[in-house]
Amino acid sequence: DAKTTQPPSMDCAEGRAANLPCNHSTISGNEYVYWYRQIHSQGPQYIIHGLKNNETNEMASLIITEDRKSSTLILPHATLRDTAVYYCIVRVGANYGGSQGNLIFGKGTKLSVKP
Amino acid sequence: DADVTQTPRNRITKTGKRIMLECSQTKGHDRMYWYRQDPGLGLQLIYYSFDVKDINKGEISDGYSVSRQAQAKFSLSLESAIPNQTALYFCATSDRQGADTQYFGPGTRLTVL
Image 1: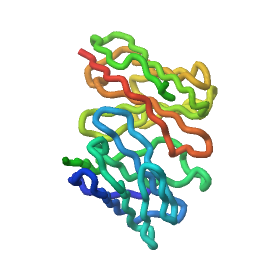
Image 2 (image 1 turned 180 degrees about the vertical axis):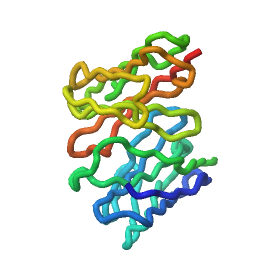
Image 3 (image 1 turned 90 degrees about the vertical axis):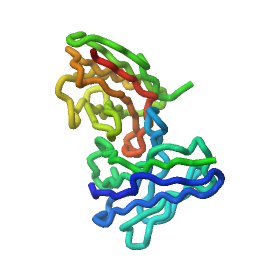
């Protein structure tokens, strides 16, 4: 699986958009980008994933650059409850014969949403 | 009701004791996983199961064993607990098509004295 690089921490004002970057310059064509978050000591929570196209769901938007070497997770209107560690994970998709085993959580980005 | 539940939520035990952590899910998923998390670190996979008859070791299986009693239940045992097994333990589930979209339980905080 491709390695990812994320800033260790970011701050965001409540009500503003939070833009969390992730670099994955060695990503392969069959690898998806996944985002999870972990609110303090709770179980990680799946947010969104994508392959090439930008994706949006009720929680967030995922913007993947055309060369797929980086992506940005956007929380459009951050709230205090969005304070968490956000993990960017790159995985070979199951439909491409991916290992379908463990998710590798790096150190992520600690997002602090401030009033 | 939560889709993935873990019991107990907190446990303090002594070195050498046998401990069982239980996980149940109502999502109807085939796949279940056990992870541990040490303070300030990411999650490490202990064991995973793709169905009732399929159990696989993860990165750090030494000192642990598992049992998949049914599709909905996956238990983790520490046969003889040691202090460096003090950690947060998470159970997760996924279905076959969305294997990397995993749903996590609330965690069990285990302290081994």
